[in-house]
Length: 172
Image (tube, rainbow, N blue to C red; front, side, top):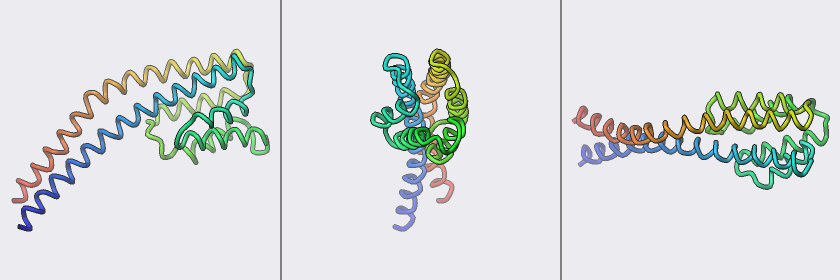
């Protein structure tokens, strides 16, 4: 009886790991979609409504979810005060504090950091251009991620289940 329960727990645990890995991939793609939406909103606020960056971030906070909401809130408030340094310094500090729980890969985080380093001191046209460049890079990453999710998530689930069965057979 204990062996049967152990086998069931082994298969269930390994399967759960496979399904968790697939869910992480799906969430990363979802977070990239949200980030793309935030960049579009930033472009609209800067271009059409002629807003400053602190106003843009505080307005974006209202539309953001999860860790991004806190990121935009803190960045906007810090920029309003202008006591904590340049946008690049504030952006980097908030990235380290708020985005550690993000599902984004290091590549996307590095590009997001580069965007923050280049936004603060440019005129409106250059800010829009930098947002456009980031958006193109993000779209490319999203396309790669979409393919990876399609292929790897199914594989992760199957490997999770199969490794549980393999370990169970091995231990019996």
